[in-house]
Length: 566
Ligand SMILES: [Zn+2]
Image (cartoon, rainbow, N blue to C red; front, top):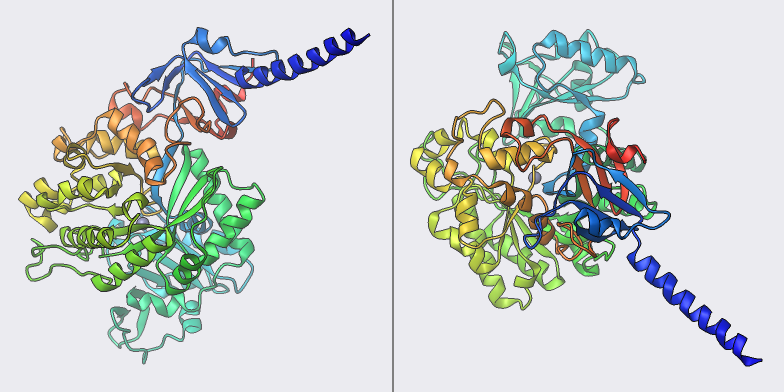
């Protein structure tokens, strides 16, 4: 009588075991028929990929992977497409990208009349009295290269205040209604560090330069929580579209972080975020007291702080050890006193936050390496936080080996190099430009770790032009012929690593992200061409076919392999 029961129990046990085994070894999704690059040096290339749920089950030959098929496994034929790990941007500004997407885009506009027509079109869709904001104009591209005026906008925007930021963010062009709201009149003095463009009578004409922009910023509306959420979601869609699965947000306030938390809790955000908190007193006080937010699912980590050591090279604000070659007597500026940077670094390290500091000039970089070295001597665990320097553009040769020696990550933007190369030699002089600028290979050869990004929206967020810039150091027309300082170009493997596993390491996430390996999260991108072998120019016309985050497709082009099932 007992035997059947034992048999039944045995069958139950076996069933559970078998179902468990089935779950562990059966793929939900299998990719075959393409070329798969893993960013894993132990197995850099593979024929096929198996995914179970949100994790990678196996990377291997077609035969090995097809053995993992079950009755409900979806099999996708890549039809010759290329798969790379989910691309990661180690330095971008997500909310700014989103806010920019809702503004009038004036990039590359050829003249004032064209801009006026774009503003008129936006005014027609905007209720009266609401602000119209835009960005990206550059009078150097126009037939007449003088400053525009409020009058140029008044005719098309009588009912709306208008504020249009110049391409470099250093000037804003407003209409008369905006000037009235800002209280700008003939008697308004130039604020410190700023200037109002005026006519012969001294009346402001509608362009506010540098610090004078604050006169208008005071009266433009701050986004409501709903508007902020909508901006972040717009940025999220754009990031998925260009093939990014994770972004390091380089400086978010408590307000923005609260929006990220809302959206992640509601499962509305597809891009994984690694957040550096802004170094503003309110934000650091709050977050250093509560401690880092560490998310094992890698959706939203808040465990870094963003500081600023100096300005930028273009505006001669980067802090240099010697004079600017095109402005003797000027060595740029440290925008935060070194004592304050050291204080914040120490407080961050004690609270368990990774210090990340914007440093562009060789002096700013040296100051930060000195500060990181001192804090490492004072706070146990500082090194384990993986301190970072953001940009690290100009480095004295003697400072290069200190990155590896101190365990400091160089977080660099390949497209900054190619955007800056037309004028950087003028700022730095030929020898400094050749020896010290964007020295990716020198850093790698010294043993330093690189993480790549774009600094969007300063540059486009698309990682493929970043990959192209990293391997060519050429502009999009292929100039200069061998690339600028070609000995500093990255190989394709190095560039792919910087945009994947290097960025994951910089976010303490290399166990889960950054390469295609069994057990890691299933983040990957399907590309129309093989960027590891294609002629460089073809990388610029390569398109993202699918973006997958945690096994879920978050973007698909109309001709995507994952969109068509078999
Ligand atoms: Zn930035």
